[in-house]
Image: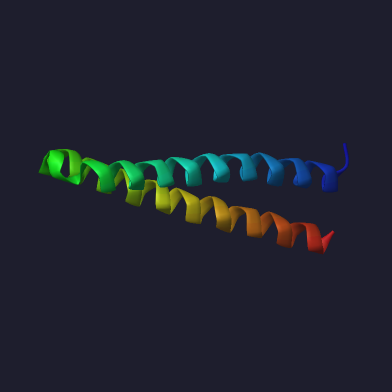
Length: 74
């Protein structure tokens, strides 16, 4: 397998995880909007989870961009 093909497969793999993280984040935001009055501890845990997954989305997005830049150099 050539280096270009490997990079393309890695990008595709990262895109799958990016999609999973985005969908999970949207679900958590919806859950929090619906259950914010259930109690402060649940809301805090949900908010921390949302922030963590948002950071993961940004990191995966940055990694995808770096891989695309690597493709341009080949």
